[in-house]
Length: 116
Image (tube, rainbow, N blue to C red; front, side, top):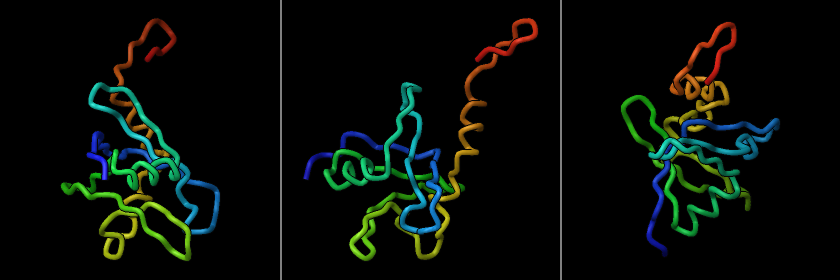
């Protein structure tokens, strides 16, 4: 297995418009240490985990929880490693939290317009 080069913290989960629990996640996203943003589809994130090049985690409260690949009926999907006791670790990071990330970017007001 390859050495893990990127440890990424997921801060946003974009949900798919599906009632199927295995298709609830469309993509995951976060911010690198250099403040650039990254986004991967669920399939791309799974491929990176399986290749061993990336490790993904979520921060819930004061804990960092690793994401793992789970297989159900032949379909792969992402879940937290403590999914059985905390099923919403990953799904709780919805698109609404993207707005919270935007709050981290300085806002400059110039006249009547707001510039980021």
